[in-house]
Amino acid sequence: MTEIFTKLELYFNYPFVRYAMIVGVLISLCSSLLGVTLVLKRFSFIGDGLSHVAFGAMAIAGVLGLTNDMMLVLPVTVISAVLLLRTGQNTKIKGDASVAMISVGALAVGYLLMNIFSKSSNLSGDVCSILFGSTSILTLSRTEVWLSTVLSLAVVLIFVLFYNKIFCVTFDESFAKATGMRVGLYNLLIAVIIAVIIVLSMNLVGSLLISALVIFPALSAMRVFKSFKSVTVCSAVLSVCCSALGILVSVLAGTPVGSTVVAADITAFFLFSLTGAFMGGRRK
Image (spheres, rainbow, N blue to C red):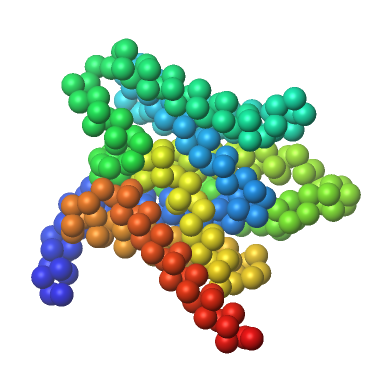
C-alpha cells in the first residue's frame, strides 16, 4: 500500500496528471447532472448521436490543421443538438430516425476525411484515441484545461439556476406548458448543455464511450434512491468518485483512461443494483 501511494505521489508531480484529474472530475460532474434528465426523458440515445457528430467535427478540425479543435467541434455539436431537437418534433422524421441519420452520417464522413486528407503517420492511433479517449486526457494543454474548467463550471451553474425548470420539463412537459412555462426554450437549453458535455467528455472517454459516462451514474443512483434530487446528488457523487478512481487506476496500471473510467462506472452499477435489491427485500 505504501508503494502505491509513493507511486501516486511521484506521478502527481507531473502537471499532465494533475490536469487529467481536474478535468476528469469536472467532466464527470457535468455529465452526471444532465444524465438523470436524459434517462427520465428517454433521450439517452441523443448523447450517442452527438458524440458521433463531435467525432466528425474533430476529424474536420484535424484535416484543417486547427491547433484548438474545440473551437470548431463545440459550435458544430451545439448546432447539431438544436437540429436534432427540431427534427425530432417533425412528424415526417421521427426523433430516433433523425439521430441515426445525423450521427451515422457524421461518423462516416469524419472517418472518410481522415483517410483521404490525413497528415498523420499513425491514422489508426489517432482514430483510436478519438473513439476511446485512450490518451487525450493525458495530453491536455493549460489552455484546454482552463477552457474545460470554465465550460464545466458554466454547466453546473446553469443547472443550479434552472434546476426547478429542468425538473418540471423532465417529469411533465404538458403540465409545464399549461402553466405558461416556455418548454421549448428549456428543452433547447438542455440540448445545448448536452452538446457542451459531449464535447468535454470526448477528452476523457472518447466519442464511443460518452453515453456510458452520462447514463451509468444515473441508472446506478436510481437503483437505490427514488426522488429526483436524491438521484441527482448521488449520481454526481458517484460519477466523480468513479472518474477519479478510473484515472488513478489507469495511471498506476497503464490501462486506457476512458475504458477504465467506464469499467469503474459499470462496477458501481452492479454494486448499486445489488444494494437496491437487498434494500427492496428488506422493505418487504
